[in-house]
Amino acid sequence: MTTHDISSQASDKIITAQTLAHFCDEYLSASAFKDYAPNGLQVDGGRPIQRIVTGVTACEALIDAAIEANADAIMVHHGYFWKGEPATITGMKGRRIRKLMQHGISMIGYHLPLDAHPVTGNNAKLADMLDMTLIGGLYPNESHPVGNIATCQPQSAETLIAKITQALGRQPLHIAAEYKQSATTGSSTENSRLIKRVGICTGGAQDMIEQAAQMDCDAYISGEISERTTHSARELGIDYFACGHHATERGGIQALGDVIAQEFGLPVTFIDIDNPA
Image (tube, rainbow, N blue to C red; front, side, top):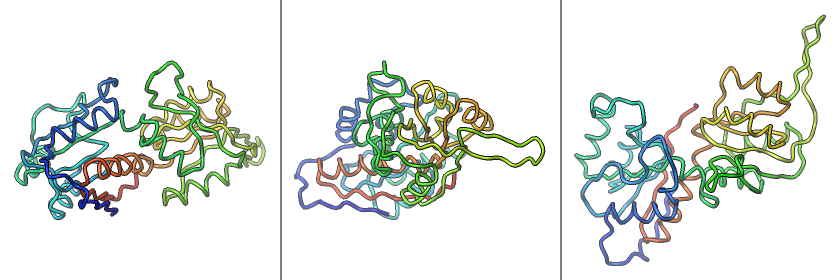
């Protein structure tokens, strides 16, 4: 749990959920994205904002923690109302939203805009943690790319694994670019080339690996891995590092919380709900 409390700087004006969301909409250029869920204010708790909790996903555990912290708003990367999900507010979603409404807590969520922001975005913060420098988008014609290319000091896969493990608190699953298996012994050898150009897209973006290879990246980093990803890495000649969906997407929402704390002079607390996925 990380708290940024600079409430002594706060002005006397009332900060509404709409005011907070409008600032974030502008800061993240939310209207520029065609997303899988609505970005911005998703649940209006109806009371002024004096204390904020941030987290990766608006799960019930985060809501309970926000209630315990007497928060007026929750800000997350993974909110509600995803395309393809049932529209009815019943079951698990109903319980979550009912708790928010009963306690007057607003919920604000940003998905792709929080991946893509060049300073506070998930990709940018992960690159910072790994001592990498973003140099452009995986899809260079996009004005707000959700995947990026970064450069770093030439390093082995083993060195990068150690750096990722230290930064995220978990060891990534690594699929080597080259996989050669002996027909007689069945043993395999992995490549030992140096990595200096890396594609990055946090979360569940494993299928961008082919684009990373086309952009001459030595390695690609994302959160999840599919069965097909293993074969793609081996056949495309690109190292793949699956670092965890949740783990790779903690940085952006924390950074946005820092921005909000400075802008509005409000206490903002990041609460990490453990998730091994």
